[in-house]
Length: 325
Image (cartoon, rainbow, N blue to C red; front, side, top):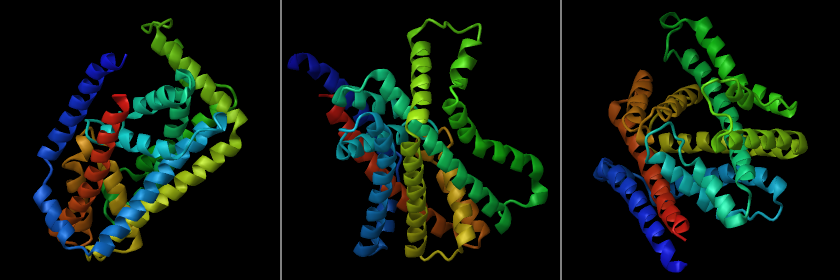
């Protein structure tokens, strides 16, 4: 049995090592090192502590959801799972998604959670993540307009605000529908004539959404707690960004911080590994509009890259160990 696992483990290690290699090959490691050299040990430690708290809070949201149906679920192993998910999502093309199947695999393989129930927990986790992130983006867009990063006469403001409002309320509407036993995704899929409704993937989606619907009705307290934890994680992201800006001597006010942070969030939605190129462009553009030199913006993005490569690298190493067992 052990011998049979070695080929699978070797394949996973090779795949994850290749992802790490291609990501680091294009990363400006020397520039990152020079940027880190500008900071004191205390400043670097402060950033790492806040980042660790953010990761812990993001994990706590998922843990609260899973623990509602599995009270014995341990917290600390899930931190490693979360890092593994981040590593796979960060180093592969896509808008910071792609590692979610790992969440399902970990719950099923290591904690005997059924595949459908693990999938429904991941659905709830992502749904609440989108809910809070969309609210942050909404505040950021308001800040962008207020600081003049995008002039009102350069866009169709009314259409933009309408689209933004729809974006913000979509997760709320979805939770509301689930609570009242309306499964919108399942209904949409079942109405499509070209979809084979008896396939395993379609049945899994339907069962998982029904479980998520039941979860909404049974565990409103857990949902409320998970939303609160998500808000705290977003606050941690804002504080971390503020610390980075301050340590690098970039002088911008609170509204400008939200505007630049939103530009960063949008950059990560681009279908590029780690928002490569888009992140740098977003910060050069936004900080440049606030009178900051391009060198300051590049230093900020290099600091972000150092943080993300560290987290993603650790995540891939953990994934190679856990998936190979």
